Length: 437
Image 1 (cartoon, helix red, strand yellow):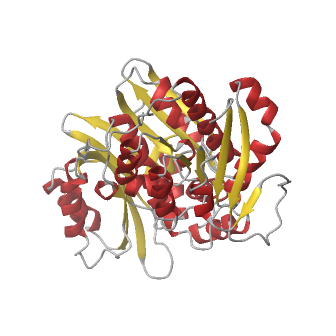
Image 2: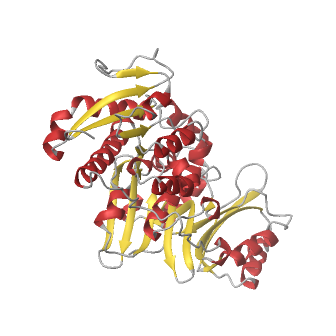
Image 3: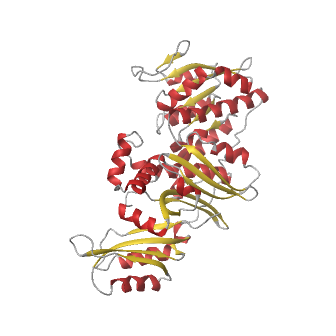
């Protein structure tokens, strides 16, 4: 860093990298006014320079070798927007060991290999920042790290994946089946050709791991989270949820319990009276409760070139201000302690209310047998709907809402109910969100 000029190198010029470059090239005066610093995009490493981009790169070194950016002694901050695991992980490690500060949007790397990366950053006296890894343009990382620093985070509930939220919104609003809504999302660019990470809950789980690690000031093991996607939710389930006054969302849950953290991602019935129920289409939202501040909610676009680029540049400016203040000193990582592990409570020990949907043959005594198994496992029914014969196979859908029960008891009950010959295999269990503040 020289004469208050910050030199930046970008690895990867895809959607997010292009957004970062646009801001650095077009918003220089605004950024200087707000930070007193001059930000210079010195170099970009990208293997595909044939793709046309709406960028004027005059004066920027356009390279194909990322290591030329990483080893450049003039580069102060390396921005990683390659995505994926490799070579992104190796490049970030190399940059940190070269005493370059790194800014990334790579949620999968932070969630699954963050412990290694933060250790390397700490050993080399540099920082690794990742605002854009969760919520796109929503400043949730900075909110937890700074705005809510005086609070113990008691609860967080997040709609963290725009693809799943778009699909569920279309199913709610236009009575589409899952496959129809997914195809529409793909046609509009909201879903990948292979949407597994999004609709399967993995993407939201990566983001929840990061948020939980921040809130708990330690590293959460991604593999300890319970993760369930939305592929089994049908138009019929959406209709039943509406009749009970709920909206189904793919919800990421964080609760601080006496014996650890309750962390899970799964489809959840949210009361229509709650703000999260009104978060539609590709938008994201995170509801946070702190012990002093009370309830807060962060809301906005969760992905895209411009929102994600905006979040990355906020990290660049944040880091550069610190460098200006601490010039000549080592910079310690300010966000997550890689040496501190966080206990996650197994899903079997959690208590929830449940939505249960069965298809059963239309014959007397079916409901009483199901209710009997639930009762034997200390699960009581709060509401029930049974429709008339559906289709040509002489089966009927039965939907039950239960009072609070343990996950372990529900799992045992469902295994027993699934053995009944009159119950079809495609039954569904969802959880209810009843925490209204």
